[in-house]
Image (cartoon, rainbow, N blue to C red; front, side, top):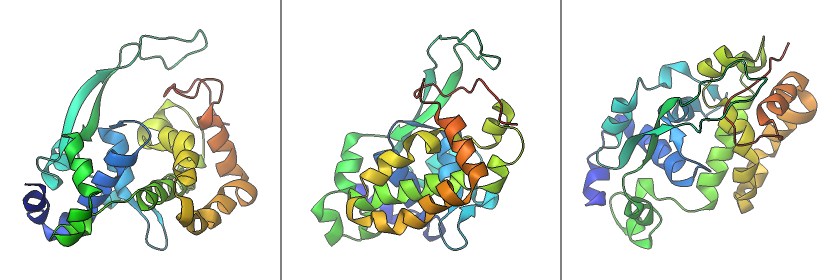
Length: 219
């Protein structure tokens, strides 16, 4: 069944569909619709960067490129509030995306897909983690992200920023034999680009690493 579905995906959407499935199967936590669309919009070809023209419009577009393979649900944020939180959205409802069933990922990682016509979608562990780490690092190096003030408006404009800051290293660690291809991006983030490094530190917020809200501005 999954072979038939994947072989029916339009040829022009195969790259987007594969990126979609890679992020959903291997991301460190479920992604929102906005996070996922920006993850798909990151162009990893040189020169790598966020390509707004690759952004999908909404969840319907995600379903269209991966018909029957993904599920979009609604989650409510924990009702938490910091005294210093000027951007609090208590009980904010967000759309999150998941693969439709665990068997989708099992199929993508199985030996049999390598013998079938859907082989373009095959996933192993190291390559997807390396790809997600690369997406995160390229995103954090986006000039528009670290220019100006880092506030809630900026996070709306760059919805993948918080995820990228928190989880690039997790995916980097799990890229195992493929990590060498990511080293040049890490060099860019740390010693060469202080502005992007400071933005990463602000986004990372180690005192509360699972909170997707930001309580400060970067001036």
